[in-house]
Image (cartoon, rainbow, N blue to C red; front, side, top):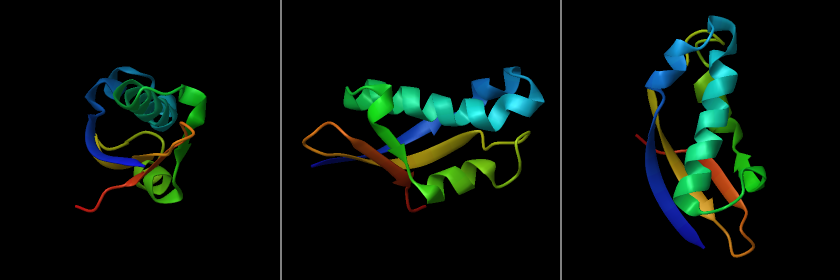
Length: 85
């Protein structure tokens, strides 16, 4: 099992429509983790704590960056959760 703490910038989410920003942020997190941990985007599991942090201020105002603790298992599945601050 491999563990990494990755800080993911979400600044470019601001250029999307206000009613799509939080869902685009989730997709951006999946893309970044897929590149950093060399796995398919379909094999990334977003934990409930990370999802709640993105959606905490609503769909229009996701955070501008977020720290993610990613665990990659032997079968290629990646589990992402909110890293301790």
